[in-house]
Amino acid sequence: FNFTALCAAISLLAVLPMRIQEHPPSPEDHAQRWRIRGSDLIDSRVLPVAIVAFLSAIGYALITTYLPAFLVGRGMTNAASLFFIIFALTMLAVRLFAGRIHDRRGENTVIPIALLAFALSLALLAVADSLWQVIIAAILGGIGQGGAVPSLQAVGISRTTHERVPIATSTHYLALDAGIAVGPVAFGFMIGLSGYVGLYLAGAAVLLVSIVVYWLTHGRHAVESATASQHDHDN
Image (cartoon, rainbow, N blue to C red; front, top):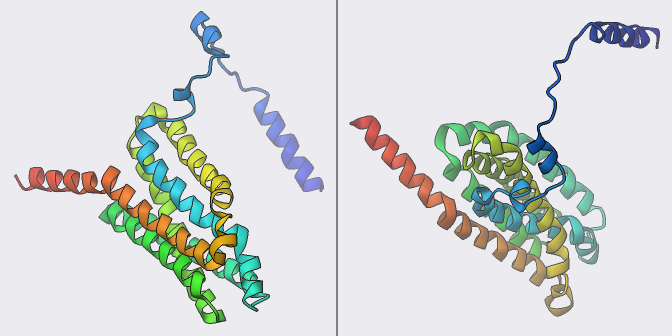
């Protein structure tokens, strides 16, 4: 405690001599202070990849919301805890090198594969009746979530200007939060119609749709840009 208090006192004394230059707000700043526009919250240039993030978040939400009850119904009472542990560890491991692959080989090397892995995870959960299937689904889900989310954020930031990076980041996380909120509500009715099997197969279909959306809105353009850059470099 004494050492902590000493460090706090030294930090306080170090701050006291500092002089912070003040910049009085201009009349324009005063006028804009309480004016909130849609462009202050969402960057339209990021929306294409934000939609992909939204769709991927739906799949994630279906897992976090309904998986424990689903596995209990399958007679695997403790499997959900193991699933989430393996899911988290895999996601952490993937994030350690997914960014490097993204930087070296481009987003098309990471995002479609990650989304496909996530779709396979949901499809496998739909038919899982053994612990090994749950473990494999957790690994696939961790690959999907760990690879897709940060890469989609990086792509979104690359589509905007330096000044709009905070808004681009906000747009990305708004999409993720919206998917997590909407997914269980929009798809929960399927449990009564086709059970958890139909629910998770529908989630897998949503992830497959997200791959198509990604390719149409960004992926194919990334290929064209990379090809043009390589052509210019060769010339």
